[in-house]
Image (cartoon, rainbow, N blue to C red; front, side):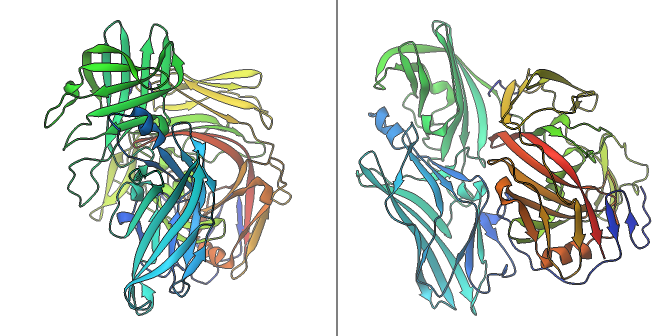
Length: 612
């Protein structure tokens, strides 16, 4: 149990259904390109093959919402200094093109730098730039390094952020032209890149991982403390590939302290610190509270001095005052490894369907639903997730990306698969039935809207839905709050704001080979986003064989789909049983190394595909 932390189809030559119209398909080809919003894992962050339209230049592709957090350990004799050394870097997403023939390239790459436990925003005191250095050979045949530097100031100190990435070039073409910077890359430093933050106070450079150490192995521990207090915390540690770990990178991901005076739940990485020793557990843990509980502003645990400290080495807890000085020590009366956190993937959708219906695996016509499982699967995913779960990225241009999925005839398994709990896959040239990932029960999921509360209960397949929800669920800015009571999964809570109703002046999307097309909407909700989803392929349970996903700020009012993406989509389109959609949305999520639960609040409209 998780802790309470937080058909067979014959197509000749094109079959039309409901949301698409056509007069044929187009010729053309599309070169591959990495996707700025794609968080897929790749070897050491490399994106291999092709030139990705860089024409011999190099690039660093940053996924959306990427932050790096410092992993420097506890300063034993100065806990205040430990927290002052904490730092978090948030990168701007997208592709940075690094010109091999330019020695200096100015780039506004860092969205923000936070320092200290209170997350003080550092002020840029210089522009950011990449400096090109030739490490060996020449710019056309050798190793080229691009080193990013930018200085910041905060609390009377000067910080310099240094990031370096190297690329091997043969015959004027980088072997691996793009470094994909995502959470997995951050957790696996190697000779191809490095990241550090230097400070003029003489302290050691800050080193970094993903803020949740997503590549780490995590466990939850429960401590009983004399006097009836208790502490739970999730500890994650990681030994990067090809590294002999004497002191593993480690983080405390979250902590929950309970006493008779109150409760403190801490999830901000800037307030949590763990130092590792030798091959196993950390000897020192520091937890700073958001607000004091009585006289207590935080906790400090120190393991007994031994060569290989184990969890049972923690025998006492130091209660810290406002100056992070121990004012009281209490004995640890019990220490339990609760269990590894189970993997969780899931979503809650609060969609106003307006003139649309959701083309899903099961026949639900409303948009207030939820599903939680141990792993993603297209049969249970929201439509915008299906291409990234089962497909591969073909190309990206602007704010749009093209995906393809190899079609598997789900009705060729003999005997037929259970349509509710299995899917048909090809393994070793044989069709086999495999079970869908296990669904989790999170108890009752309550969706609180303006003026109403909807209770969602799971069916026998673990799917949550409401019956006859109101046609109008929310207005722009309304708070939508979701609370799960907990069962197999612990209780959790998410909230997001409602969005304005989406209005599309022309729901027809014309796709003509060799021509770009534009999809427009009426901007009405700054801060929200609009997603355009064009799909083609056989109906469920098969996922779409071709998809174009575009994502843009609402205020843009439109997205352009380039001729190359249109061509690629038409080349892969041989059946059109999917409805295409436009969605204005906001979302919030719970994320950790093996957990992602997303709340999506949106207003949806159908799009009609017309091609010739």
